[in-house]
Length: 150
Image (cartoon, rainbow, N blue to C red; front, side):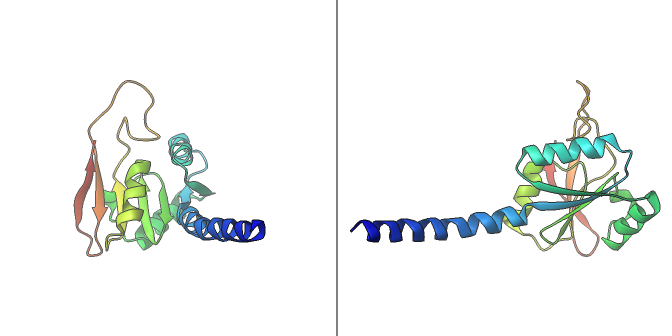
């Protein structure tokens, strides 16, 4: 009886652990940024606090520009750092909850972008000043739609 209980408990733990592992691996974000950008580092900390595993790579500005172009981001969609997660691009100061929503909903898109560096966005929240901004869903044809509004 006890060995049967242990076997069932072990099986239950194993079955429950598989989705957790799959979810945690899909929450690893690779970030390309400038070595001197403090707001990029602050955004990485925001994402880590939300449970994402971050892998940052410092790149020269010319290489960052190339990464953005290769990701399909037009200049009007660009910001200071570019990230990749789950087959998507995340450009700029996108809140963690929007990245989590992107990964959950899995739209047919390139990814998300917060163009520029709006005050009050994650990593740009240095004080009481805030400006409204949109998180844009970047579609594969280059068009965008508002994914979230702050």
